[in-house]
Image (cartoon, rainbow, N blue to C red; front, top):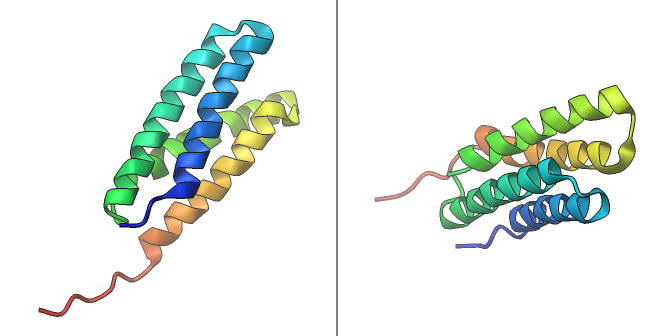
Length: 109
């Protein structure tokens, strides 16, 4: 079982971004959203590490976070943090969406 290092790194960066948002501007919503999404993404990365075809949770939460932050970037035009998180989320959505369309190996019995 290979460990999903990019998934765990993505989860850690989202959680760290929420903590940094709280430290810099005392934003409770940033802290809550960062820790909530970071936890969900971390659990999704754990699920993907256990079974590479169990990508539903991390794909859905990456798409939701990417859409939310993309909307914020569109409205504010600020690269940090909305644009960066939207871009990284888009990359992760593509990464996991490729698993949907990749053919699964045929198991011999």
